[in-house]
Structure formats: C-alpha cells, structure tokens
Image (cartoon, rainbow, N blue to C red; front, top):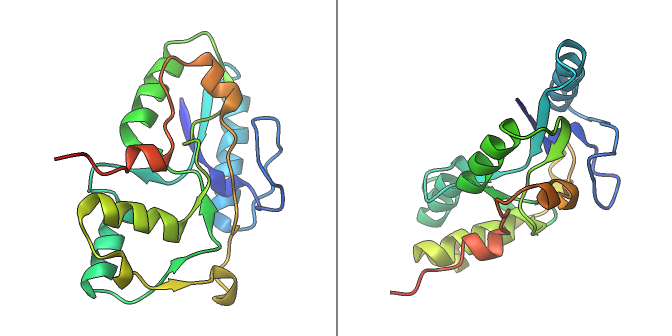
Length: 179
C-alpha cells in the first residue's frame, strides 16, 4: 500500500480518474509521481491510493488553520479558486484497510465526492465548529504566484464502486451536528 496525492496532477483537466497519467508541476508532485512509478516497478500488485486534503474531527492542519485565521492568530487567506476533493480521515483509513485486504491492485482514487474551494472548506469548518465565517479572509491563489495546481478534482467513482466504505463529501461530513 502506497498513499499518494492529487499533487501528481497539473490541474489542467476538469476531473482526474485513475486512468490519467501524472503531470506534476511541483517538486512534491514529481516526488509523489516518481514514488508511484517505483512502487509499481518493485511490487506490481501494490495498491497506490491517491487522496486529497485529509480532514478530521478538529485536528487536521486545515482545521487548525481555519481556527487560527478566524481568531486572527495568523494572516493569510482561504483561496476561492483553489479546488480539491477533501476526504474525512476515517473514510480514508477505512478505504485503505479495505483496499489492502482486497484482490485489487494498481491506482485508486480515494477522495471525497465534493469538489470545493479551500474557502468553502473553511466556511464548512467554521459552521461546524461555531466560528464566525465572516472573519475568514478570502483571496485568489492565482494572484499569489504560489506554485502548484489550482484546481484538482479527483474522480473516485471507479474506486468507490469497489468499496463498501462510503467516501463522503465535505458538505456531508462537515455538516453541523444537531444539539
């Protein structure tokens, strides 16, 4: 089992399924793509699971960043043009365990079903956690010159069809729980 990243893609395609060939634009993405190639060469029956932003129940780096922005403890912005398919850590862990015990090998996309911006992700986290979403600063990543893909939407349809684990979208797993 090798866990890879959506960073293996450039973001120039509308959606990426498991048949898309990596075309990374950053050293990190290139390293992940090279690792995929090495794993396939060493162990052709390995599972290579590409995922996206990993969200937990309050302790992921993304959630901590939203809290820090809302509190004014850090500066920065949540980009409205930077799109990913966040996955909940328990969904990812269950899917990885299921794939490891399955007869399947090769590339699998294990990401949430919702393609959302980092800003929308921040708003969902703020709503769930009772933060004032109006305090979340916004911006456009395209204006920053930061390297890397801006819009990478992993299509997990083929992998989801093989799993009993349901890969929920961020709009579902970040919905506020009723009191």
